[in-house]
Image (cartoon, rainbow, N blue to C red; front, side, top):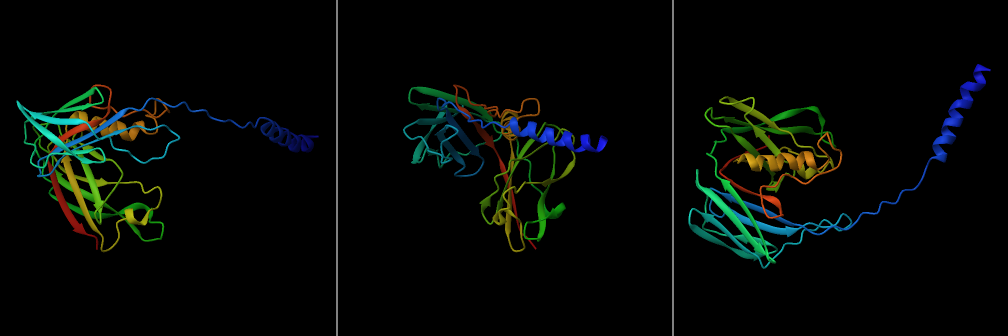
Amino acid sequence: MHTTIKYIIPALFAIALCSCEKAINLTLKDTTPQYVVEGVLTNETGGCKVTLSQTKNFTDNNDIVGIDGAQVTITDDNTVYPLTASGGGIYKNSTLTGAYGHIYKLNVLVAGKTFTSTCAMPAQVPLDSIYLVKSDFGNNKDGSIRKYVTVKYHDPVATKNYYRFVQYVNNRKEESVLLDNDEFTNGQEVNTRLNFNNDNDDPARDIRPGNQVTIEMQSIDPAVYKYFFSLTTGATGDGNNAAPANPLSNVTGGALGYFSVHPISRKTLTAP
């Protein structure tokens, strides 16, 4: 009797599972497109650039279509610097460079809508050096040793600091968002490993012998740090809410995106 029940119960359970299967067709409503502003002003010549685009519906392709025809300016005190359209929704000013302590205001006027953002340039924290370390969690897809860059710098003790790192391998920009702050390292020498997740096993993203690797260290404003941090957590839900959410923009007027004014420090190495 016990033997019979042992096999009947799993069979009934399997039948129940099969009978509960149902095809679900998701109907996703189209949404009103929102403008996306991505503005950058650095301490380098040619480092002033604003990209204007719009969001798309879920079923649309991922191609970004820039929005031309906008009036874009950046104001420093009472001086207004116009940005010139260069096509594809990109606006530039080749002579404007950011300076420590200055507060800059971005103004975008497009189709009767106005978007603004204000950002101050933090003090520059120099990137002392970069070096490679081996991964503790396996190799690349082809079996070669997986390597990551570690950045070394001295965090200033007097201020709260926020950092963004941009990695280039053979001039190709790494798509992962790489952030750090001094919550636990204030005033210390910092060695931070820049872990990125190569989910699609793209060999061009791996660091291999002979590759040229460049790290760009940005000292960023707290609001910009929150934007990029929320960009990483909001893409898949933040743990309290499984639904993806828009990042915390520092642009007002109803647009998504960010305006970042930051100094840059760079280091380059050739992978052994």
